[in-house]
Length: 76
Image (cartoon, rainbow, N blue to C red; front, side, top):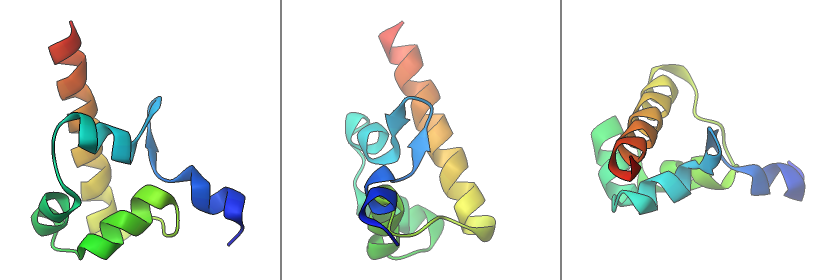
């Protein structure tokens, strides 16, 4: 995987997944425990070293979209 691909990370809307998680005060460990994956997996998804796939990947995307909606409500 190229360095450019690694630096992309998972993006939800205009914010990266890490930015969303941090803005909501949630740790990688919390996300990992909720999804039944390792903290390393969440780290890899956020940095673009791996792509969330399957049922857990879909759940991760739903969680991130929920965090995004949460931030929109708080900022309104």
